[in-house]
Amino acid sequence: MSKKLTSTLLLFAVFLGFLLWGINTLMSGLAAQQKDGESIVYAILLLICSLTALIAILKLPYRNRQ
Image: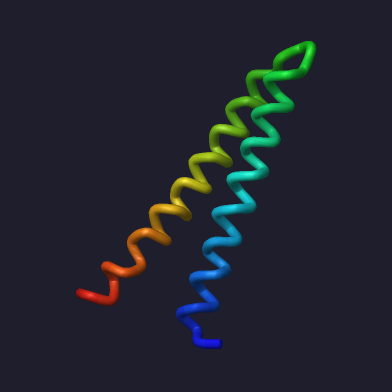
């Protein structure tokens, strides 16, 4: 397997992992009896990290053209 394909797959795994972790943390934080603002902010930060990984994946084809 080439290095480009391996790095793309790993970046996609990071995106998917942060996305699922962030959604799970956000849902459990919102469904709790006593809502904790810290866990909700932490979940939003995880979702921002997943968005950053997604943007990096989408920018990969443009790096080859330059």
